[in-house]
Image (tube, rainbow, N blue to C red):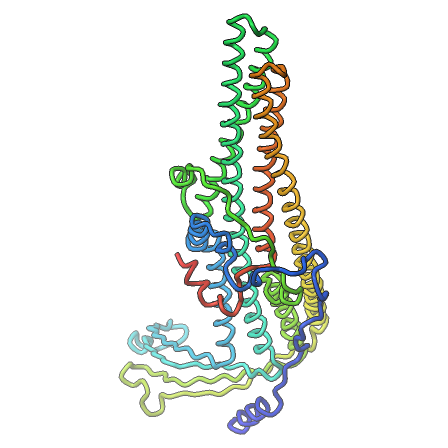
Length: 479
């Protein structure tokens, strides 16, 4: 037996190998530059700082930080990461012997049929046993090592998923905050125009009472006022919904932020240009791409786990214990027992099922490779779309700013000319309607511009460096 054990250990040292393919990072589409990027960017790359700090809005920064510390989806993702780490720790124990202890006590009485002629005392017997049992799988073909490798890749994927969720939640918080400030600005515009149009209606009513106006003018002025008033409830509902969403994102009940956020604040400012960097930098920074690559790594390693079943599995077992008829005799001379066993489990008669499992693992790896390549393309598409949206939103904002300024001048001049009797009420109402429309469109466009900047920062994974942030993630999301 000693020779058998030494032979098995020598085989484990000298012949150990790891079956299955070794993971090699696949090549991915990596264009030199983004087609929609602008030359001459004037600020540092977004990876240098957390993106929400670039908007210079203390309330926005506070809300994002509260989301990253209190959001319940993040806490669930952290629990999933803890689970993956626990599975990894468990798989690592398979590399070492498993030692257990067992003990037993029995008090038996045999029947007279078993011991004919024996007295009751002679038919009574006690038996006690204590033993330590050890077992160890000799990982000759790397089944255990490949399983540890796969679980380690699963942990990496969970970490990347957690970072991706942090970016997504920070982006949703910033976008919702921008939409809130935009809705408040549109509400302000509607209310100011309501005041102006109410003044116009009062003027017409006074003229009607004096006999210098008619019911037609009053009806038109009243209709325009009511149309403007109808816009206000929709904006009020939108602001309430945004405040509810921000509260839930930060882990609080929906009405928790109503008092804090009800006071109107201006939209956050955005930089004139944003440096998108290069596609290669993006792919190294995007956590969704990193997660897809880790899942490909895990699927590749599990091919080796399945392939190892084509070869015999050696298990070394041992037992050291004592069995006695009295507890005082345990571990005394002649009550000790020991055994050493080399077990061989080889499913050579079940190769059909083994090959089926290998084929399934190969298919999983092929699917993971396709998903990785798709994640790369989707990441590049996401940035290209965000770049073109941001650029066109800025151009739209600029045109509407000129239109709003001109419409304000036109409304002011129309009122002056109306007071002088040079134009009729229709021209005043038309100018005021155009001014309201232009101001509302400008507020909506500026909201889209800031929101598109947020989307661009999120698509670039701004402010997130995987190695630097990996450790603080658990601390920031711990309940």
